[in-house]
Length: 223
Image (cartoon, rainbow, N blue to C red):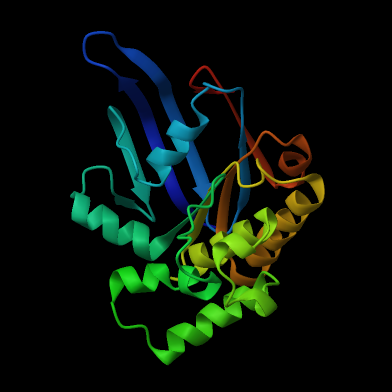
């Protein structure tokens, strides 16, 4: 199994006059198709690490490679294209657009790439909502959905462009235990059936223990 992500000697420092080092000489490989969790106390550097993997932030020093290609030095336009095509994001707060219904939110990544959504894209959005168990509410507005349903719409949206990697930052943080378990099971099904790589930040030990690999970070260092 090849590595889809490789981090080499990653450091991240914020501030110019007063400097704060958040990540310290991180070396990390993520295998394609693997199912990983990242754990650590608040302020340990988890989200910064995930943002660098997802190219939402650049390291102060070090190299980020995706499938053997160095990406940390790419232009903003090139990075935006890779994010839209190859990486799906699921956050603690779903960031759905309330003025649109469920299926329109799922179609949004395609709408960003192309203002015209083909019948094929609409069929895929329906299939993804079926995958996450939301066929009956696909035309419901966001505010008519429960918290768990909204998060499942966000998962379907993240899958719209068939990404190679899903990055999830506390995806069950606002959900009860039953809804959290449902989200985990959906992630597992996607990982098994589609071969999508998962990296999940979580404070939920029950979720972390079910992943294939736990990456623990403390004070900016992988322990």
